[in-house]
Length: 426
Image (cartoon, rainbow, N blue to C red; front, side):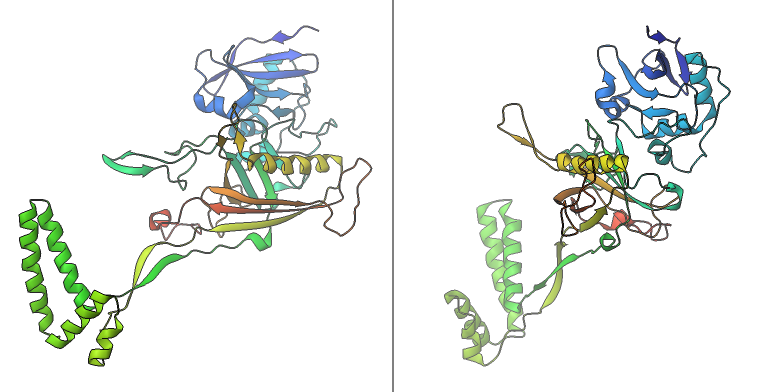
């Protein structure tokens, strides 16, 4: 049967056509009227046809337009949510494909676009809505997602930081703490799946922030020598002669100041000890120790935060077993370094954005936010129960999957600039 291409039609501000072949139809984004944006191309990945300048957005597999009638291809999650919840989208598809069935049903609108895009339940027509090689994975399947919280993990192409200018000043650009699409410009993993939704894992819901503070000592003699060094540096910018004069003048003044509290014997003993590298000489000569003015000083951010998770996957049917396999392969592919065409250089693995999702679809208001992370460790235990067991199709009866993530940037005060906001902050 020949494919039937519809006339162009608008959804929002973008132009589309449907290409119907038998009982299915492909929704294609075309450049007529409004050019396809670079963001759309990046999201679409392999579904973008550069020769024809069009994107296979979605597949309508159910031309009777029952619930969950459409599969995601190269569309964004937001667009898929509208396709599944906005009546005008379904009406436009029905008109374009020439279908006039009265069997119209809609899934209940939800507060977040991601839910409509990742539905895996079987619809009334007996066909699963599982993405075929699409961008979203989920475990477990067939849950009422509005009633549960999830951990959302998205993979992005690594982009190195660089030096540039920000507000007219030189700066190190590309803090991985910025939002996706900000000055980092991170783009989603280009092939295969790029997002996984996993259940909350209790032992992984911890965070620890640390700041570096270290002991600092400064004796009166050291303070005097510090004044000498400062004077020398001030004079060095003009000439050698001036630097020498400034140093000599500072030296005299510094030791005159020191004499106010130290005897000549004290100063002589201290300098003698410094000269031979034996600070105990001062104590031996005077029976005293110099007040070292011990103080705790800030010396930079502490250790970067790490997040560790351990998930037990127990497939309940063939679809869930296949989904688990795809999730494991998603991580194995994403964390592996990639070779260039000449096998000379290695490209950095993908980086990840982790987000705790509350049941309304937004950032969890009582759990911490997480900056962009690298996955530093990934383990799979195929027989966690101590014996080898499989289903008839070969799937293991359960899997233990452990993963460790490390944030790529420290937490700064401006990351949590609003202490009165309705979230937990970083």
